[in-house]
Length: 299
DNA sequence: AAAATTTGACCCAA
DNA sequence: TTGGGTCAAATTTT
Image (spheres, protein in one colour):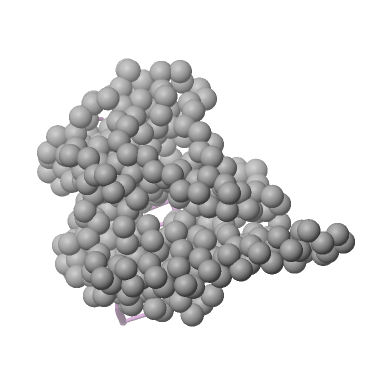
């Protein structure tokens, strides 16, 4: 708790203040006629990066849904074309599924025995270390889904997993579903955490045909957030609209409406949705502190 | 050499 | 039989 406060303070001091300064400079720059656009874009990129870092850190300390629901579990499917209304049941470790929805093929739902929560974020990293163990093309979805498990699954029996999939309607966003909480020794996890060097794992999604030339098959966060040529979109996170384009029966990807938290960043609006069983994201304070410390000097 | 990723095979409920 | 999730051998990266 105290440590979380300390971390927040640091985030405030380093990232947010820095971002604010960048934004101020940008504002000055824009108000001056004939100022070079290149540097404006540069500033914009810096601002974005700064805020992304801050959000990432804060978000992992304290997942945004403070009003945790009492649901035992929540739908985990991100299949953009499927409506879900079955329920999870307790089950063994794996390979159990729940019924289809609306008779449409491919609309499965996985049984979940542990808490599951989903968020949307342009940021792929978090404070845990993950090992990718699979990737699947998902029916009716444009982007593949990547599967990750905790690096310490076998050494420490940690059962946490996550699934990551690009959001169809906003390809710079990722839908990240966390399943189960970490039981691994967080101290052991520290050295593997690559929370700040921006040059690591995260998903490498290969999609056969992506239209944006700036989207390479390897979608590292840096590439995502750094793009100076991203034009105005580099500055704005578009509002996420959960609108089903090819199937009317579906209103929202996360149908079991729970908590939806919004945060405003740079005047734009990003929506994060957190669901489920009062996700017990249990972080060791030390871990965060260490991670944050190691990050804070990287601007 | 060890750790991580890729990717086709496999499992199983629907 | 199918699609989603996982496994594991092959491959790549560190």
